[in-house]
Image 1 (cartoon, rainbow over the protein chains, first blue to last red):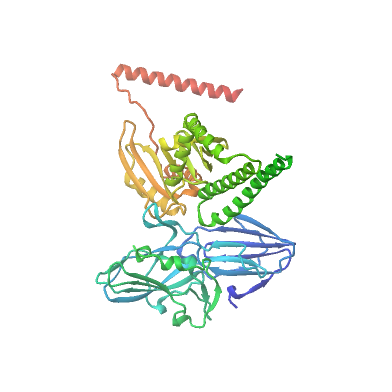
Image 2 (tube, one colour; image 1 turned 90 degrees about the vertical axis):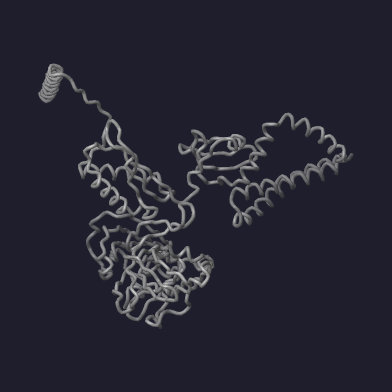
Length: 262
Length: 280
């Protein structure tokens, strides 16, 4: 069974280790409390390719990381780890500039390094939320005082589902871009409103979000941003595994297209 | 006039104070969700004093005081008070402009002249700051209207300019490439606005440069310290020296010989002192 669907029964005085992307974390279960220690390794691209590992090692972590201690009145018996989208929007840049000619519509598959949420027992709120890869911050806006703080990432601009590499520590967001205007649309960077997207898991363990539709209308100023209620055909039957941290989507629909593209 | 009326009037004022306090707090609890903390505080005080005024007028009426006479006297008193409280009134009006201008709010970090601190309250007469070393500073509103006020954390991102000089024999291409790489690899440096290395000109001791990177305002102080340290380590690793003011003395052969012999004497003295220390 997939890590994301498993509810782990944990025993007292045991230690568990999770390695995902560049993140390594240790859970030490004690009576009425548990210790959580984590650190990020120096990131390289191949980290995303590595399979996620959840083990029960006997050794202590080799690198001293940040330690969090949680105390409870009742002993913790179960632990659950869920994939989550980052808490801020992600600004992705294509590895080479992409232009969309007039009257064209394309679907791009963008992948985002996932965050993990650690849940003890059946709690709704995660005790800890951590990125699998530490992403750099960036600013998305026309000026340094207008815009929003985002995470920065790159994308290859893959348009075929079959070409997508299967990476366990990434979440795929299909973006349909429609250019109904008479001008070529330059995609220098795209902002993905991560906090508004739910995470779904397919039967083969791949993670995805709803499809985002960005439409540039005939009139230069007219734009439309929508979020599909159904998943792409490749993900039909996928199960909702993690809800978006922001449930009010009105703020993204009110954004103009300029706030998604630059 | 029965004694009980005075008691009742006093009770009314006390009740007025209590109701004013409770009601203003309740209203603010609702307002805080919609308005800023600063505006909510002003509403709170306005509601509080209005309620008290209503109860005081009722209480005065109860003990038989003619409100009309009081209002007449109040008119004369106001004129007198106006002359006496010019400074206070100036501060009150300045306070209104400050609030309207929305230059800063409670919780913002501002710099006024030599004073930097967090705004803890914006009142009718003055603004109160808590300085970074935890001192309480009161600044009259009138002064804030007249002087330059820097709101340090108004915007979410901020630029850090690291200015230093390097020696003239520095490989500038290598330096620029290494500095930009340092900024790219530091997750605290924003990818955009892009980091910049600007060579600003020659000085008597070397080449001045500005290394500008953007970061989150919340984390600025910690970032500045860490990034300066990282830059110094980088310069050491690529063997680029930070220049310092120095003077080259060019003289005749005799003068050069004198300088050389003085240098020799100093070197031998230093060596002797070191060997004496080791022996002792």
